[in-house]
Length: 605
Image (cartoon, rainbow, N blue to C red; front, side):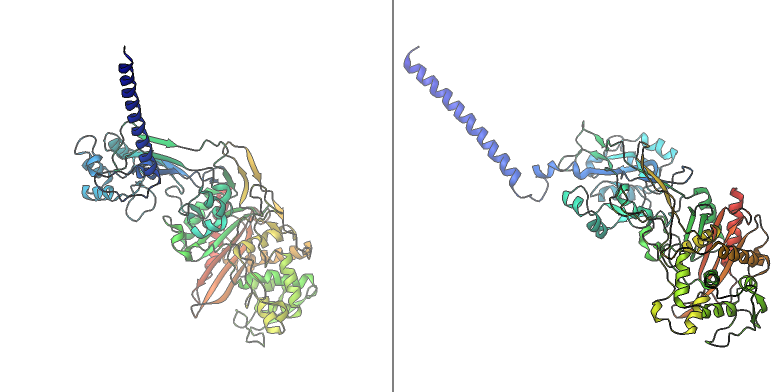
């Protein structure tokens, strides 16, 4: 081959290589431009690569948040229910049908709706979603019949998926457990770092009250279980890729929180108080042996579908302080005994009128001559106002604190709770209550007299009232009521144990003889006093009634109480019942509810 021909061939090869290099360079430049250029509006015939790159992520649907669950003292689940639900992903209408043209009609019939409504829902989807009945927040729980019908249908982007419902159907949301909902302000406060790391979003749900809030960091878990449906940038299904399930593989999460509640008993008591018409108030049942919270009921009830939608219903009346009325006479008697303001075998005279401060006994004409035990049994205002005036404000205050009144009594960690690396209070919304707005400002006997009968500035929560009974039964030793006994990892290993704890006062405790005297008086209340009407029942019981005058929206109302324990000789439960804002001249609803609660407790034994 001549030199000229060889040179000509080399030039052609060089030109081809140069052209290929130029084409490759152009492709690379175009790709770089697509990556750094602003996102263009999508329209028919335009499919931007950046939009397509996130199409799958936008099609994720959360099946299970991965949040930890609660269990009662016997192991029954308080939260968490998995069932089949209908899910749909956004698609072009013409891309939806994959089988028979009548499949959409059959699906609508199975759901019990018109085809037009179902079609409208599918067309309106901007992001993946579950089919819900109108007005309900949880996805529809499909019946076995619906599942059988839907399984035979073929519609792109529509599928039955296992959904983890936080609150099982038929289970009423409980104030003690609380609820989860969207709280952007709490997320910014508690999870600022995770928000910046983008491991959480402001739209994520977090605990809004109760244990859901106090244990939220542990309950959050290691991430959700999601399902993705592959589509291209124009919302058309990418056949062959189909669905993808992603779930965290951490064996330690979600955690399992074991509470002290008895679910079956809780449900029985809820049905009972609702049937008896408790509109506003609370019932607290404590284990008399250790003050564990066995049941805690608050009314008004939390809405099942949207627990956080009504702030007034979100208040847990079991831990909110209210005017106690005559149940505070238990504290007044303790103070009088501790500070020797009453003589042994002293008798009192009540003619119905205290003689000053406009204070009268509730019993017209008075109780006549009576002992201290008689005074507690008959709830005599004259006697207890007189005892309070014999005491100083500080003596009343110190005695109340010795009995766990006027401070938060719910379980609190001693120092930092290791799993959270900070102190833990199981009931963060618990109100401490009080005796006086300012103890140094107490100067007149009228304020002391009104305090002695549980009026004026005195506030106690039903939890504190029930715990007061446990304290008396334990000879003056104040306990910290628990709502959680232990927390375990998802694989069953123990994460943390919450031991039973006493709540010692800086002033010490009341004497055992004081508690024995008060307990005898509580027996007399039911034997021949204000609680005589509930003496008949399965268990013999003891307790103290109370009625407090309060004002709501400018009108006078009544707080009605009853606190006590049973059975008499071997106490198993301490109970506090509060019926708030009742009408004047109404019978004490709390007293009747207490008897019914005790009878239900006796049934469980």
